[in-house]
Length: 198
Image 1 (cartoon, rainbow, N blue to C red):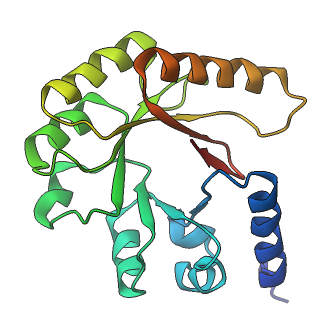
Image 2 (cartoon, helix red, strand yellow; image 1 turned 180 degrees about the horizontal axis):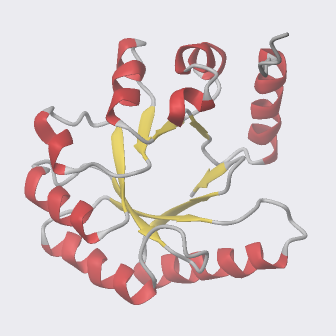
């Protein structure tokens, strides 16, 4: 007997969940994460269901970009793991937005990206200890990017949950908003189910 797991995705529920989020946050943009082949569901399958409903897709690897490109995706594509030197062999399209969360990514981006007006996200670790820079290093790297001529910089961060009753989320959000105010940057932060952009 074969007891292989089966995953079934109800496209009507996916659509209604996105529409629910859109109605709850009409001024926010929604990013749908499709890394790891849309968590095994298949980028092509998810793209067909979500393309008219979301503002951006989140990817982790260059191969995922090529899949979206083959589907004629015109949405913003957020490169969650950043873009390293070897990825600069192709001209990075305007709609591909990297998240820079370590010194090597910043060094490579400054060295290889010619379009200083392209949007880039700088990753702030608000206390979860996952990715990005703590506040002082964030500010240091922000000025490094600005001094290199980059001006279209967005503060990116990650919170543990979107659940309103979770006190730590409020603490993290307050840190993000405080740094965004201090640096005068636009911001976006996400948790597993949703991303919010200012």
